[in-house]
Image 1 (cartoon, rainbow, N blue to C red):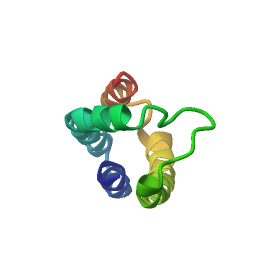
Image 2 (cartoon, one colour; image 1 turned 120 degrees about the vertical axis):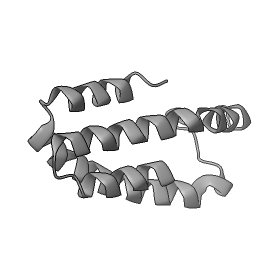
Image 3 (spheres, one colour; image 1 turned 180 degrees about the vertical axis):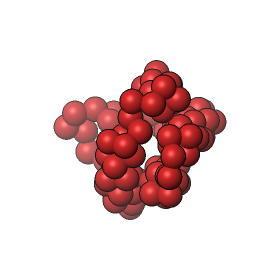
Length: 101
């Protein structure tokens, strides 16, 4: 959740393609660092993210926050990508984002 909020805030401040690439790269590094925590959640809740699966009550509030942050981030990302999406550094950072699993 914090990573999404930070990305949204960083994207809202972008003034150059370098700023955009830096924001995406920062997000990529943060999410890579969070991977072990995400894996633990997946083990604890194996149905998490599966179609039709009900979200556990203890995760609902966090899910609601994540949804709000995601909407803000998506709006900021659209503007950034319209301006800087064809820049090679931005494209590279976005590709790295897409390759994370």
